[in-house]
Amino acid sequence: MLSRQMQNAYGRSALETEVSVASPHKLILMLYDGALQAIRMAKIPMQEKRYADKGKLISKSIAIIDDGLRASLNTEVGGELAQNLDALYEYCSQRLLQANLKNDVALLDEVEALLIELREAWAGIQPGAATPQAPAAPASTPGRGPMSYGEA
View 1 (cartoon, helix red, strand yellow):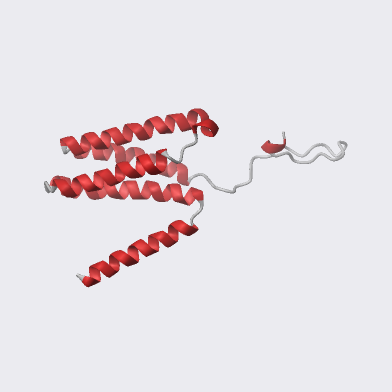
View 2 (view 1 turned 180 degrees about the vertical axis):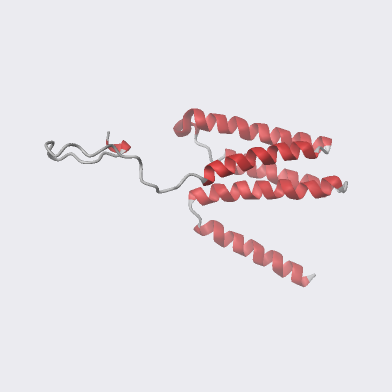
């Protein structure tokens, strides 16, 4: 029993360390990973009719989606994309709630597939990558060189 407690403490400590040094981009990936892990883990107790364990794991995934992913959206800056993501996250939370109430693994699979797709898209974004630049101005235009979007 002591060994398990030590493993849990180590796991929490390692996660806290990883979170403290992670970039905002990495933090979102970690939220996706946490939600996906909880969904995957919930399938086992659901099938074994261990309803309390299933409920805890589904609640954990809903909390990650609502309090992590949705809360990180900025609809003022993100515009339509952020609004669409907010609606999709709401949909995922509702489907997870239904999965919990109906003991429906197919609903867990549906949300898992959606989150995998979103995670892959997010992972494909290269933070800090150079912004696309316009071609250099002709040499006859003094003082003009490549322009980033922010300079236009």
